[in-house]
Length: 139
Image 1: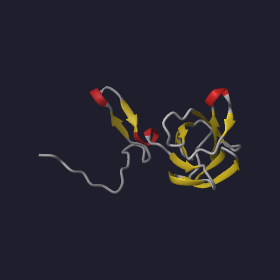
Image 2: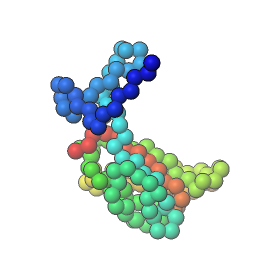
Image 3: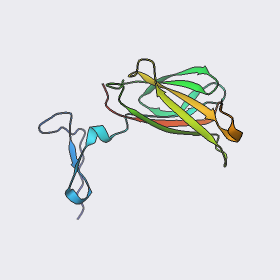
């Protein structure tokens, strides 16, 4: 018979904000809070840039063609966070790279630049799909 656990909140026994989860093979543990994505976004960069969907994102800045600022609803704790992402227009054969860098204050947002790299060019372009996720510690 399967068990079902329903809760509204989890709290660590020794540290209220920290819960360790035992990994596969019962040999290691992972901190649940540090393992969660802290922010993710999917931007429509064509026309007036807008979030298609997002988590922990507030306003979106438009710095020009293919250059956007993603602002966090809840800031990161420091500048030591990672960003991964991808861009494209939904077509097979898109050749593009994304350049994600931290914002000028390092904790409140990040800058996403969509570079078109076909035929050796390195021009920026307003892609229809610009997505990314942020991992690190929240403030």
